[in-house]
Length: 322
Image (tube, rainbow, N blue to C red; front, side):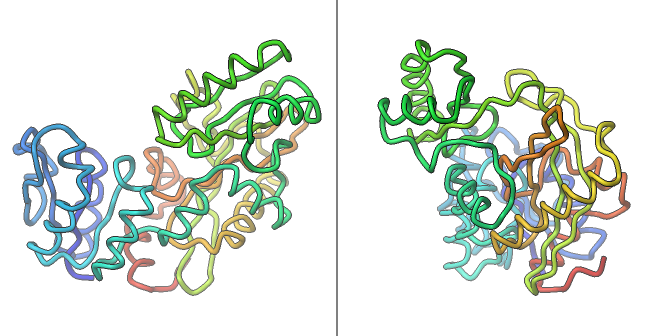
């Protein structure tokens, strides 16, 4: 790879440009008309406008982004986080256009993006998962039956969910129907997919996530955990590393389980495996984020490893040197 187009804006675009400059790699920034004078536009070696201000007409416009890569002769695309970073269709189009997508393959994004499917994959691989429904919930009667088997309280969650959307706790059977309909509506509006699944509600959990790196030669490592328990409306507010509730024995166990999960998914590039830790220090797989995360710099500060550079090296088919 010689020229990387950054399919993003703002902080993460600037972050990627910094890593590329230190690696002596050329960068191309895309920008909307509203971002003509933005920092990421000014710092890159080259910048190209891809549409008007609304993200749907610019940063989410796959056709324009691919055309921008062809015009600027970019041989790879870094999606950053948000926007198209977990869009399997975008990753597939990049591959079909002979442009290297700096992240996992579109098949892996698909597999891990559907929460109910990913949980079933982990269950088969021997990774502990939160007790819940067997795949998606077919209808309200199926929801009633499975909630009775799992035992209240339960969580109803959007299969294609993320960002804390499409999640509702149900504490009593008489509240199930209303919340079932609400989650279906939220899932359809937020993700254009109304499939939902069910989990056992865990009281007072800690939210622990493990940063992993996986190359295209089968090597996978973990870089410790981050604790993102402090949240508001299922949105993370504070991240810290290392977690104050994880001792060395538990750290080894949960991090090695994250590697096991990544191997089960045949994962490549940077990713994050998220777990819930209960009051008895039992942990359960929640989901896997198939991208670099907003909070990645605290892991970099703790380990001294530049995760963006590692992403680029892995995409260049180099083995992990750590």
